[in-house]
Image 1 (cartoon, one colour):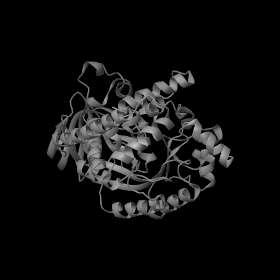
Image 2: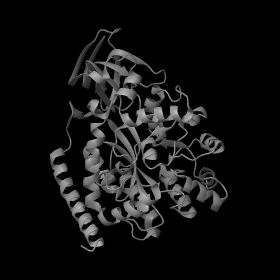
Image 3: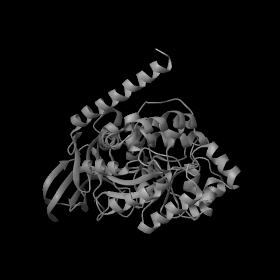
Image 4: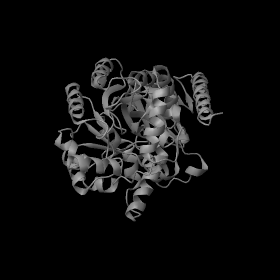
Length: 452
C-alpha cells in the first residue's frame, strides 16, 4: 500500500486510540493532512511507502489524543501559592478575591495566561475549558500558543476586576462571545457563571439564553461545597442541581463543574437532562470540599470530564497526576479497588472530556477525520517500564513531564520538550517582574499591618 504527500508522519509508536472499540495498536503510524488524521496504519499488517513534509519518530513511545482539561482559571497561575491551607470560603473571599481586585488587569491576565500555556503544553494538555475575567486576553494568549479553548467570560453579582458594575456583566459577556466567535480558529467563547449562590436567578436565566442564542457552552461551579448545597436548599427548597433544572438551564450545552454534593436524584436529573459534568478531584481535596461521586455518575450514564481548577487550589495543571488521584480517590471513597479503572480515568481526560465540552466529534480520540490533537509520551524511562498495560502506565505511572511532543490541529507545538511557538524565556522574565511587584506589595502590607 502506498501513501503520499502528507504534512506529518508520526511513526513506529504504540497507538492508544480511545475510539469506540478502545483499539490499541502495538506498533503503528499516524498520517496527518490539513490538520486532520488522514490514515492510521498498523505496521504489523501493512506495508507502506510514505512521503510527508515532516516526520516524528515515536519508537518506544505511546501516541494518544491530546489531554482535555475541563476546568481552569488560567490567569490565576500568577497567584500560585499565594494562599493555601484554608477552607474555600475564607480562601476565596478573604484572600483570592481581594488579590484579584488588586493585581488582575489586562496586562497581568495576558502574561499570566501565557505562563499557564507553557505549563499546559509541557504536560500534554491541548484544550482547556476556562472561566475568568478579561477573557479576551486569555483568548489572545491561547491563540498565540496554539492551544484550543472553551473560554467563558466570568459573571458574578458583585464587581470584578474587568466589570465594576455587576449589572453590565452579561453585556460584557455577550460582547466577548460576538467578538471571539469568529476571530479565533481554536477558540470557542462561552459564559462562565460563578455559582448558584454568587449569581442571581434572573442573571442565570439570561446568561443561558445568551449561550443558547449563539450556540456556545454555559459553564458554572455546581454543588462544590456543603455550604452552597445547604444555602440553596434553605433558600430555594431544592438542591442546587434541581434549582438549575427548574430554571431550564440543564441541557447538553451545560457544563457543571465540581458537582460534589449531590443526591441520587440529582445524579438522575443530570443524566436525564444530558448535562455535562467535570470533576476536579485535587482542588476539592485541597480545599476540603468533598469527593465527586464519579463512579455513581458513570453508572447512571454520565460520562464526566476532569479538570485541574486553578493552580491556586491545586497547585499544578498536570492531568496525569489528576487522573491518578481521581482513580485512587474513588477506590478509597467506595472501599472498592475496582472503582474507576485506569481506562475510564484516561477516557475522562480524553474522549469523555471532549464530549463534555461539546467537542467529541472533533477531538478526544485517534480516528480518521478527527482533528490532529495528539501527544507523544516517551516511555523509555525507568518509572514507565515495563509497560504491560498502557492504560495503567499512563494513569498510575506517567506524569506531565513525560510528554515529549505535542501536536494541535496538525501543528507541532512542542517537539522533544521544546515549545516552538512561545518565547519561554521572555515570558518568564515578564512574570518574574510581575511577581516581584506582588511580593513587594504583600510585604509592605504586612509591615503596615504590624505598625512597622
